[in-house]
Length: 243
Ligand SMILES: [Zn+2]
Image (cartoon, rainbow, N blue to C red; front, side, top):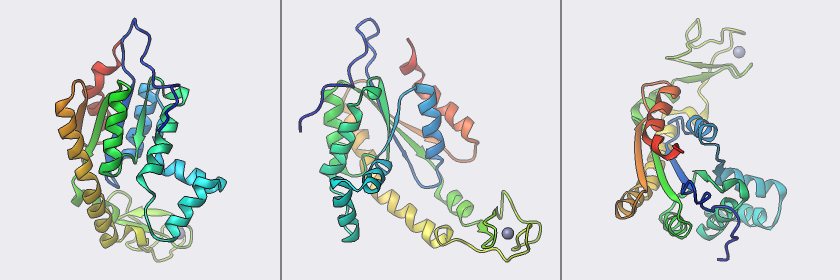
């Protein structure tokens, strides 16, 4: 694959700071989106979401978008080569020169192996952050959600209960559980996430232990507010942002 040589350059010799390739893993309900935003702001590097990129291609209806739509209609996955190519084109844009944050990638072992090759070739500093959560906490929180089918107001059995159990405060309509919030659906999504992601994280754990500088950080992401969790992430990465 011919890679553009723009972007991902090492910083000027005086600083010898390597570009940062930050890969973020977190299950549904782990607060990954919030932590990703904090990281973008703190590090001043862009976040790259493969989901967003694919949706954008589908929206504009270009050849990539058309091929993705066809595959999705056929119920098959987007091939690794296509996702890899999208990511590599993106990380060679000038705004990624100092680094980037990957969200939703790599998702398969083949993607992870390709990413590892790129990290080595580009002399980038690889950092994997895994937001570790207690699935039972997520299940009870999400399955506690209720919504008013009339006005759309959201409630939560634990954190935001309605004044009268099961009834909307604003219009008295009976609250319902959204399909996506049903306990069985949430549980299934978490099982799927675990099955897909755990081998990829283990791959980085093994690869990083053999290389220099790269690190895998596991951060407890349950039971505290997002700012506290972000402080934990920062303390693990502090040395990377010096100088
Ligand atoms: Zn209502």
